[in-house]
Length: 293
Image (tube, rainbow, N blue to C red):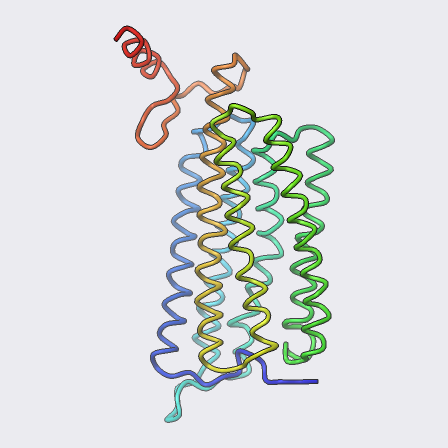
């Protein structure tokens, strides 16, 4: 059972401009976050720095994919008297998202595990399971959503989409176990609420992706294509930049707590949060003055 592919639609001038705008803003935001991550990686100890490096890679890879999306979107539609008509390159205004996700989603899992309480063989086991499920979720989605009949085979969409959803459910179960373990191991830690918020953010925003995937099976219009492109761009910004910012905060919170507990972190610089120095010589003097009052 076949239908028209979502990207093989004719766009109005306004719709074409809106998609171009969404893709460009997402790409620029990801570039800015990659630069910020590079400049601020020294703010956390070496124990949690792999999370920051992974986040930097996420933003860099996603930025490159958006460069490709913008270029292929520009080449994938030709302006005519009827509007912007799709060409044979139109699929490449969509497919590179899967190339991006195949790399970045496993890296998001790696980020989360790096700031969790999982260590040693347990961390390695969770990382292997998480990365495997993440790759399975994206690859099965690509097969059904793009590879088979140019994403226009409804049967393939449902079969491979279901397999992708099962991998997603597996990741959610893993997240629940990580939250339960963090509640025990991070009891009393300022990082615990942020850690829980980070997982909740990821779980909520990830729902945008199966919703867009389902659009291919239910409706193929210029409006649904524009909605999907804008929604995915916004979801990528939140899932990569918002998530990455929270990971950075957790890493700083845990670095400060490790130093306070006398753990040798190798971190010698001050730690700042929300414009306030929470760790370092100056912070110590501030705390002393506060206690004297």
